[in-house]
Image (cartoon, rainbow, N blue to C red; front, top):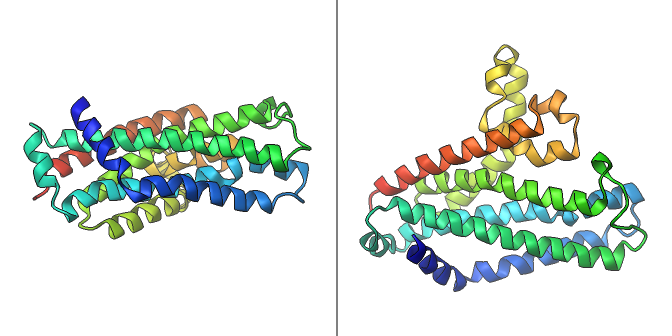
Amino acid sequence: MGQLLQQEIFKFRYQRLAWLTPVILVLLQAGLAMTTHGASVSDQKFYVSSAYGGFQWLTILIIVIGASCVTMEFEYGTIKQLAIQVNHRWTIFVGKYVLVLGYSVLLHGVVILMTLLLKGSGGRNLSWQNIYLYHQSLLANLVTNAALDMYGGVMIVGLVFLLASCSHNSAAAIAIGVGVCFVGEGVSSLLLQSFKSLLPVMKWNPFNMFFLQEEYGNPSYQQNVTHLTIQQLGVGNLVWALFFVGVGAVIFSRRRI
């Protein structure tokens, strides 16, 4: 696995998207930060704790990268060469999954660093020690949001990998992945409202797990939206992540090449 992961990292380093993604994130964060100078203190706290929208944009970019990482092997036929080098093809799938998760951690570091710089240049009237949600400092809220976003990404990347394993081209996989991950919250809310008698079961649907980070910022979601605590959403994310990766690995290993 170690040698396979090194090979994946080597290939990833030469992909243009891998180098463009941090630049895109920085530009998007800076663009939003420029519009917040006249915002109220409360709104500025929200923008800073959410990394000037960096976490949301990062999710979209990770979906694009994850889908492309899987489908490109079949599009260009390189999966044949990779399959010869390993005893079990599912290890290729897991190696790519670990690579994308590791890259996600690096991107979160970039987002946090950029937030520190932007706050220092445009949010001088705010202190990192200012109290925000849960009686915690603004800095603690930013770090917590980053941690929750990274943790939630474990399931999202697993789902994207599963969808990509069923797709024949990267464009379709990206479109489906973005659609599912951003429409899924609405689908979950609709299901919970439509089948209230099945609420004890339906609340554990995978789309409901997308609310993990949002429920941290909006505690009322527990009663009005998810009907699950933060801890339960955390467990649900992990269970569904394992499920998606397991099914995706089976599909990937059995797909015709």
